[in-house]
Image (cartoon, rainbow, N blue to C red):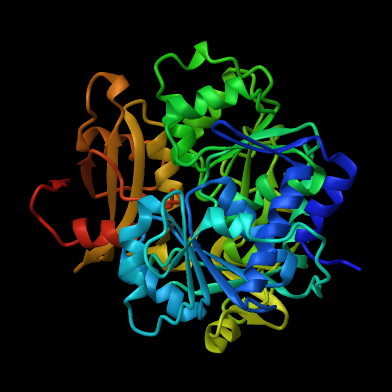
Length: 518
């Protein structure tokens, strides 16, 4: 009987007990260690009254504790609620209340936000656990939770269809929604990862530096490596030099990071002094990878692929493999083995090849709905298909090209402008390090195209607005080109590296001060 993802650890401890599962700083955890430790935490949670279906929220940086709590919950059928560590107290409190969390585990450095969250309306946490520091009055220490549980195997009833996580979407356009992912969703995602051209092996090593509270940090390599018995070297936070050092010292063979992280790595002056010869596969995802980053890695002999996925799909939907990433630049590739995709019009009818419509997907990796939000679930699912909200087109060979989020599309003078297309052209300019395109109100055309650009300091000279607009006009139809350019030090992003375009719109559309106007 399938007992969910917690059983992966039990099986791996039996098959590969001495093999290293996690490395974090000076801590090295074998699969045998992980089986014992997660069983002890699970036993302690049962002792606190946690039962199947109860929610255990975690405000934890990337760590062994994060993975132990997650897997312990999986063993007893409790549901883990990972929370973005960059959220403020009221935002954390909203998730605790919305999820109905019974237990709350947080890291010592995040105590201020955790304590503030507990005071928010609707929060009904019964037990609070502090990791990495001494417990305050009314709290439990994580070390006590670990030490207090029995290591004997648990007889629990966990089914693949049971919820494993409630992962809250980033909430860039409003209150976040909790996507409910089952054990089977996570299993099939792992199978989809194994079914890619590169796949994964028990000998593979990765540096887990993408935030684990995000599905990309968990679902691309960390959980699939547990499934096959590989090793994750866990970094609590991202630092370009520290990440390069970890990749070199651990002899990382596979690596996933969001584009902003990859871009930061390419800016390290002595990048080539780090030995990445063991790296056989690199992947970006979460947002489009700048072509300059792909070129940089390929020039150093590192096969680079681009993945597309969502919280709601656990996450893998499609992969643009390394062999096609140059010839098919701009595409998100073809869907994974156990994923189906369609492109439809506003009436959910299939559109012809190379016609823009909304991307719909279905498969055993697709989530079961939004937590306690039937209206949002009904809106997302129609006739068994999940509506991604992404606009794209599919060619005759099944390659999908996204043109943008439905909500981000700009309509200027009756013409559709897809920001991703304009952004990729800006990325190609030698003086541009980062770029984003949004729509602003325009009395004549309805909307105008607004570009926000970060100059590349290595280029020596900051590009001017006229130069960038001319660059775009030489490569795009004029109606797609920016009429307005803003130069900034950095673009606002959330903890997963996604652009906060709502912040850009607030700051730059309709505001004349400090704007470079065409």
